[in-house]
Amino acid sequence: MPSAAPAASLHGPVPAAWVAMVMGPPRLYPPLPWVLIGALQTLEWVFVLYTLYTICIPVAGLWTRQITHWVAPRSRFAIVVPAHNEARVIEMLIRSCRAMNYPADLCDIYVVADNCTDATADVAAAAGALVIARENAEERGKGYALDYGFRMILAGRRHYDAFVVFDADNLVHPDFLNVMNAHICRGDRVIQGRMDAKNPTDTWISSTFAMSVWVSNRFWFLAKYNLGLSSVLGGTGMCIGTDLIREIGWGAHSFTEDLEFTMKALARGIKTVWAHNAICYDEKVQTFAASWKQRKRWVQGQTTVARGYIGSMFWRGLVEANPVLLDAAFQLFTPFYLIVGTVLMVCGFLVPGEFLTGALLHRLDSSDFWVLLAFVEYSMPLVAALIDRVPLRALVYLPLYPVFVNSWLPLAWAGIFGPRPRHWTHTEHTRAMAYSDLLALHGAERR
Image 1 (spheres, rainbow, N blue to C red):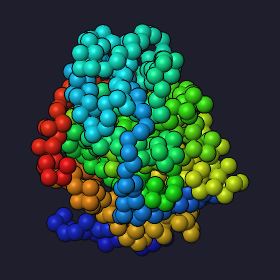
Image 2: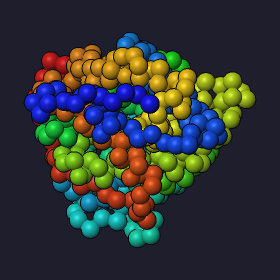
Image 3: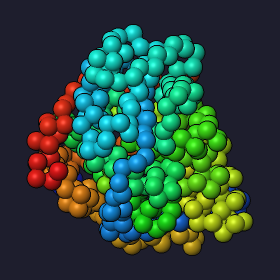
């Protein structure tokens, strides 16, 4: 038994032993079963290996490898906008699309007015879009709207080389279709454009949300493209060859229909290509409650897709020695990585270190590894903002970026283990901006 700590005066320093007794981990006796220790150490290796994976990938985002030489416009595009009660914002998107630097006779704008109870269809038609009305109270959501819209367009007389999908709240860079035309002419069949924020200076939530998007764009999706891996579709700013939709259909109806179709195509050997210089801007929610609701839905959709594809992607990746499929499995593991990290953190508090002798996490904890990792992670928004020349005014909320990032931890638990809504839920959009307003925000010299 260790000797008792000397008594401390009322005004003297509190003995470390007292602090350890109150704040330290409780001792668990008898020692843990070896099976449980083995399981914990296996989880530690999974956690650390995935962490190293997320460290290595972003390094490839420090350079930009993209199509820079465009070809003469010859691809015909059907721009498809699924819209549910978007009368306040959809006109600005249509104006933005019609102002693109691409021949008007090579693109048409279709708005799928999905179960609308407002003037979305009328506003879209008045702005020059072709409206496809859809009423289905049971099959609700963006995935169903896209499925219906694609089928209606393919059944028509007009021929298109590719579908381009935007959300109703978006604004579009004038050269978006020129970039996509170059990709389609090169033979790419699934392309994801860069997603930016049109309102990054509104609130601390829209700002930190935008920062996370800037980091993902450069240090995740662009990095994967630079390494020859597959990106993932992001729901908006995506381009898909019509021949592929004819061949395999859309058929993606989960809460993350974009990720679902990404995996559906990848299972057939078709990668999603990242187009960093094809930019669209979407509205970021402005309150934490709205962001929680939206991101929780994403986690729920991601876990649904993971259940259908993670096993096959990982197994095929191992058998075929295919890094693209292995990377896809790692991508699908992301929400569970947060769960594993939480479990290990709790166990590290409850279980004395001697019961996990030699465990990898205890060795890392004794170094400055996690401090360095946190420093790098929280510096990445600034690096991405400087490289991609985003509105620096949004960085005034940079000190709150860790709050937003770490909120993913309880979100993962709520999304995976919490109740699931039966239907897709709509995110309300109210920030109507013209593209000229966006230029003023970013500084006209960068566009």
